[in-house]
Image (cartoon, rainbow, N blue to C red; front, side, top):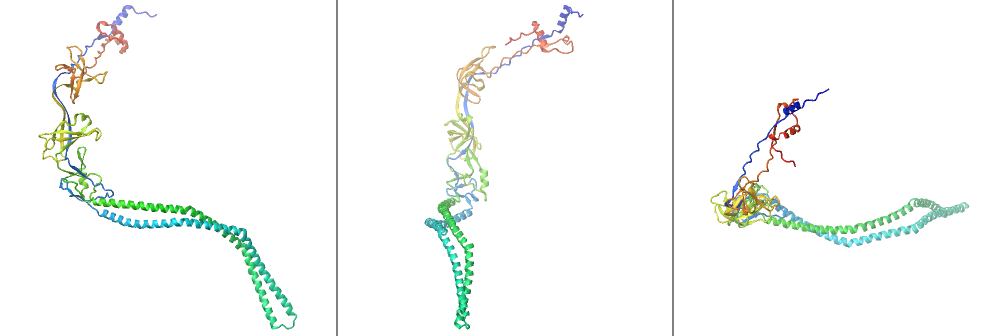
Length: 529
């Protein structure tokens, strides 16, 4: 039998495996950054980039109606000063002149063709009803002929054919009978007189001819019965069918042919009008060449768009001899005189910092010192590009060395006050329960939590926010929210060597009860939720 271990032995064993627990020291909290409230200079401004423009800038565009093959012969260089009417670009016009001549000749031919069509239409409008009437009459006559032939003429023709054969047979029989009687009569006489011989000769000839005629008559009769009469009937029937088809064809096609000719006349008139309009457009395009200056000024290659000169280099390539002038796009801009202004692009986030009539400091990049004074004239009410608006800034003074196309850096000052109660933007927080409210954390006595205080805010810069109510000069606030309370780390547990009776460490679940049984050396546990 197995013996139970003594109680004293169990106690010693438990003491040998009990772990030793050391409480960890709580970490020290980092000191929070603070700010002392005071009066500071407050400036709201926007930094922009812009391009100088002249008040008189005319884009050169000819907008041809038809002709777009504008090959450059010669163009004035960029920067040339020109007067109104001076030639800017010479264009090759040989092909355009040929096209105009071809259209003029084609117009005269089209006029003759149209006249012929109109006369043919006039004739056809008169002839069509008559042709329809003739076709109907021919069909009616053919039908009447067929009906009469089938009902009467066919029988009469057959009877006439039979009678003709009978007549020939009768004539032959009569001639032979008469000849036979004469021969019998004359055979009784011993001597045949000369007259009798003549009579016999005539009778024999008549009998021979009668027999021949009978043969012809019989052949004709047979032919008429076998071929002539059926063919006659077939021809009359076919003629009636053909007349019917001709009448149907005429009734179906002649009105359509008349309508078709009317449409051809209408189309001819339309084509003539189109050709005349095309000819007029080409002549108008020809009058626009060569391209001349619309006003006095300086030639600039390219155009100004959204405060930037664009396509200057591309224009220089197109305006070389042999290049293709783009008629529907601005290749040349004539810049006239007058006080310059500045055109700038404003980011949407800076729109509130560029109000109309706001003061501006303009530093031309070529001559930045001293800066020029300026004032915002206008700001576009709608975007000119995604997230971009356009502002025009007037110069307070003229500077002779500045020309259109130069660039400048601009500071638009929307608000400046030398002493404003303002704090860093990061020290102003949004209320968690009301997005419209703002608050700061005011430092109180040492060792106490900061006090949450609602404040009224004014305008803001990138770094500062104006406080209009809720704070006083000299108070101290936190620059950031204090971090959440840290949970104290779990007590460090170390096991004595006796705990490893079998050479392995016990699971944490086995260690927890042992730690709970040693309250003298452990940190109190947090209450369970």
